[in-house]
Image (tube, rainbow, N blue to C red; front, top):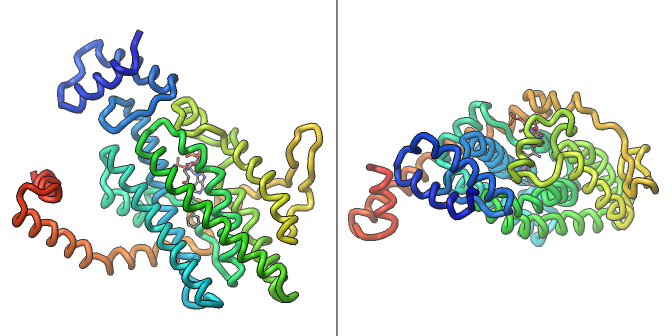
Length: 346
Ligand code: FAQ
């Protein structure tokens, strides 16, 4: 029987450039399947089916793009934060999202896909980012609603990804989730302050929750019977739960939190179902989700235009960093940086 150790050996041989001999491919596949079944991690040098690699690149890239595009809606409020304390917190949060993007692009690089290629696909609309970031941040309360609901949904989705079968993605998620947890709490605390403030502040908080609730439920992806990738991704243990399972978990978490906040979730059909031990909730408008994915959300165009401009304006930074690395490599031929630059030039 194929063992995980054989899987590692197979992976190392493959990495060293030896072509799989006839018959070996099956052994590699069996060893890969055994490693996944045993809940072992697949690492970059291990053999993996090409479809597994492609699925990971697709999901990780979409996730990375979401993190960096997701900086825009909140960054919109940095200059108008109501106090120095709120401004410092918001700046730190937006910087965290950039960091999450970096961990994720690095994880994609371990699968052999470079950052430049992925960014090009984002800028030219060939790869997606989360639907949620195509909605506008109209008031200060939206910063709180994003923290509470959007980061809350992100954590619900990402905690199981800490057990994803691909090692670099799973390890990146551990740190991301710790930071998202802080983000969620700052959003909750911000909304609580508004909810307990003046009637106008309370109304502003309620309005933000009214606008962000349904798009947050869409973040989990299409319903299970329309989810193209879920079955295979769950068999590979990339995803551990279906889209609908995680959406339900999120609703159940949010209901008591909304009560503590003194805010109402905008769903007249939301009620506790004693038999299921879960909340029933109203129908999601999937036509809106599809329109946003097609590029017709309120801010799709603005997000990509701004992102592309930032990339172009940052060209000199990338050139300077490359020039610095090349100089360092000439001056310190034995350094790690030098080996990496040499490898890139080779
Ligand atoms: N938006 O077959 P499935 C964050 C696409 S991070 C856009 O169910 P899958 C942090 C999907 O790609 C938020 N597209 O797909 C933050 C596929 O299209 P494709 C991002 C969506 O992959 C907070 C098609 O629909 N998180 O918020 C969406 O098995 C605050 C069929 O769908 C992640 O990316 C959507 N919502 O399941 C940052 C987590 N849903 O690729 C700043 C990792 C689905 O065939 C501020 N990703 N699609 O063209 C995942 O867990 C999964 O990829 C799902 C989708 C669950 C999102």
